[in-house]
Amino acid sequence: MQRSTIQPLLLAAALLASAPAWGQNLTTRVSVATGGGQTNASSNRAGMAAYGRYVCFESNATNLVPGDLNFVQDVFVHDMLLGTTERVSVGALGVEANGESKRSVISGDGNRVAFISLASNLVPLDLNLTYDVFVHDRLAGTTTRVSESALGVEGNGLSTRPDISDDGQFVAFRSLASNLVANDLNLVDDIFVRDLATGALERVSVSTAGVEGNATSDRPSISGDGSRVAFWSDADNFVVGDLPLTRDVFVHDRTTGETILVSVSLTGLPGNGPSSRPAISADGRFVAFKSFASDLVPNDTNLAGDVFVRDLLLGTTERVSVSSAGVEGNGLSSVPSISADGRFVAFRSIASNLVPNDWNNTEDVFLHDRTTGTTTLVSLNDANELGAGLSTRPSISADGSMIAYQSLAPNLVANDTNLVEDVFVHQGSGGIPLPSRDVVVLTGPTLLSTGTQGTWTWSQAPAGRPWWMAYSFSLTGSVVAGHPFDLGQPATVLAQGVNDIFGAGSFTSPVLPVSLAGRTAYLEV
Image: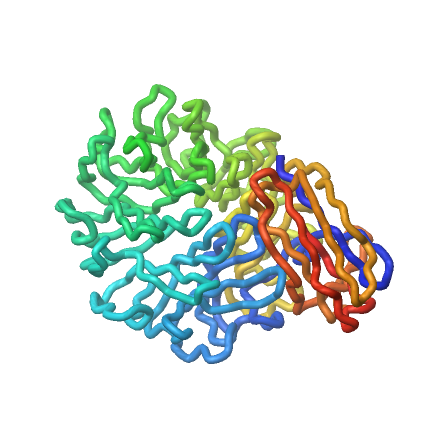
């Protein structure tokens, strides 16, 4: 059960109820500069940190941060609480990359960002003239190359498509390099996992017996703790009974060494069509994927790619790219993103019959709730109007309440006049189901005088989830559900931390300065 709360503390004023500090709009454009200025070029491939505060993306824009003079695609992170944007595809001391960087993913806490880059100046002695996988640590300000052997030898082939565990320790990626591990003799792309804590590197696109694949493997998706990796492969030698020339989805368990087939038919055999684009839940139990197979579930007659979810514990498969009434889509659905517990699946679809009044004849982003069976439209504006342009590539938060995506639609937010693709975040309301929430038990003052301190304690909050107390001198807030905010941008974080394993926490403020008199501070737990 996920629980959350916001406690506003009015400093020498009156108490107000509120929503999350960055939740003032249902749809927010996040591919913006600090201060909110729109980009002068396209932005895409959003990645949502588990708890929704941070979003990574790639952009060709030169006006997101000062000093962007390399005229290539870079990777950025936007902080939805502070309204700041920073470039993370940088080398030591913030030196900008001398080659393009893209395909970013972000750790659960938003601290580490993995990406690929053609740049040769992000780390010393990068001499292979191809794409490598890197991780930037935002707190430490360091950039590390991931796609190298355990001895630090750079890969002799292209490396790409990283995914990162929740704590940022493990990075899965695809590589054509043959010198990352011993006995790599298959001359095809393989899937590897790097342990950033120990430096260890292992190949996971292997059979249970450790036999390397006899064809390409791609698009790894790693579980929250890094123990399981889903991927697709054209190899037919990972499991007994696999058929040649058929693309399937597999999961490799790094703890047991077992590799299993995910895209299985009703009879337990490989599906009769290609399957790809897996997304594994944080707990490693559920795998969402795209498939053209027609024998994974009963009554699949649409002759189109659909999105499915496989329950690895129960051994069941269900189709989620359907309407709330269970009607199959009349067009291709793909690119799933799954919540931490597997309940919510976001995906893109060209289908026009998943929700009523889908008239735009292009890809939209949808959310399916596997508990209630409902499918809702995500790519809409605050007036619940359909996006008037292509929307695609969703990335979902851990609890399913926030979804980042890219869109060409100019009507999702006000003053979108740059005529390029932007990155947006839609938050849980306006028909999008939120995970069930109970009330957090919170004790502490709601009114404090300057020159004093306050202490707050809480329980029944989400275990391990970050908390923040923030304030702002800007009064350009807005009204949400009838409650006024005065927390305008830029906001300042007074303190932050993480709930313990039991969902409890506490905070004692510093002595409050006179400059905060009359301001409201917001504690989000």
